[in-house]
Image (tube, rainbow, N blue to C red; front, side, top):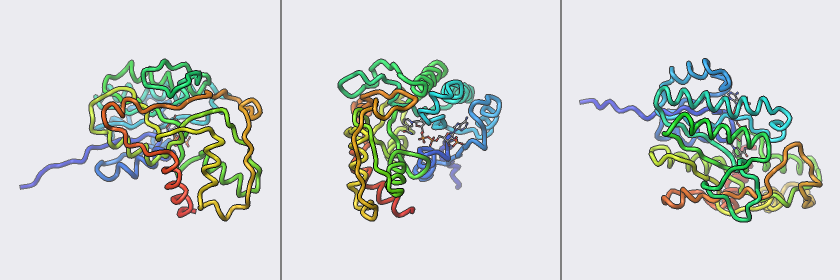
Length: 293
Ligand SMILES: NC(=O)c1ccc[n+]([C@@H]2O[C@H](COP(=O)([O-])OP(=O)(O)OC[C@H]3O[C@@H](n4cnc5c(N)ncnc54)[C@H](OP(=O)(O)O)[C@@H]3O)[C@@H](O)[C@H]2O)c1
């Protein structure tokens, strides 16, 4: 007797990005993955998006594709809204048409940063930059189209693929630059591999809704930089000085929230939170990045 057993099929948008590439690796154990990059379809083109997804017939979609450069989003607001809001709406409409669950990756930057304590899923978003506004619109479109959705808000992501703060710090240090790092914005560095593992845990569940998914703990960008250079894997770099600066001193096109620390409240309430402390994950990443150099 043969058993017809098919692994659940998961379509990952933004599959070549920082989170997407880790999701493809982590989920390959247990799922059939359809990695969709920009060359497969542009999420801002509805027909291309619909044709690809309908052909693939996934059991769920994890939508990570986004225009993630916060300062460029400020300078190119139409593009930010087109990719992050309209693109997400396109993916959500198709998810509804084929009746599959959608996991949409959102951001801590939906909040304005004026709260003293960590933000909960029930706190009211009020983004202060175009990136945050476009991602929030994406969230709203998802909620408008679907009831089988997970909105996963994460923050300060880093991983092997793509650009991120850790790689930028290491590159500047290698070039012998003295570093000035903002010390009045607080958030939670989150390792893309940890987030991929957390999403894997949520994948089979039906407890739909909005979830904060960040590492445990928090720091400022300056404290994050100090922790990077504490790693024994940076010993071969020449000693550098890191100067803490204010957001006003380190002016950027997009305003950032002062406090964007998220609490994984919904995960914790349901006993689902497997996110490690951020310092521990950073140590793991520093070893991985060294091995991959
Ligand atoms: N990075 C963070 O610190 C951070 C923090 C909070 C939340 N998030 C959210 O987490 C998710 C993953 O972030 P990430 O850091 O992995 O992003 P990433 O490395 O920038 O990857 C995003 C991917 O989306 C693709 N993409 C962009 N526009 C597209 C389009 N129109 N059609 C199809 N693909 C398109 C990009 O392709 P190209 O490279 O060709 O443009 C890239 O491969 C995003 O939704 C982001 O908003 C990120």
